Image 1 (cartoon, helix red, strand yellow):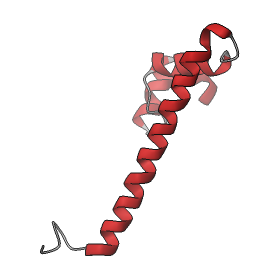
Image 2: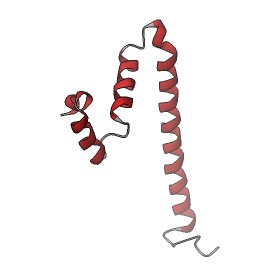
Image 3: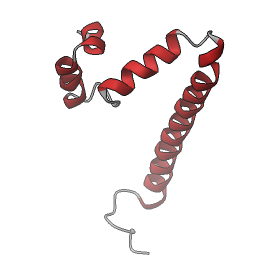
Image 4: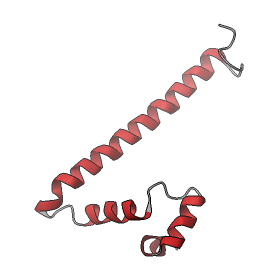
Length: 84
């Protein structure tokens, strides 16, 4: 089904509904195309940009996780601001 989700919009939409995909159908196909042909001179810059965007997303997710851990250690499980 994973391979079919790249070619079949209905299967892709099911993956999105299940939380297994975050990009739209066309965006997924475009990203896959860029990654497969990133060695072509014409696609090197867009592929590089895509890699940078993925890195930014990963760093943002790491920051969110660390921030949530810090907040939990500072105020525990109290609701709201923890009485501050």
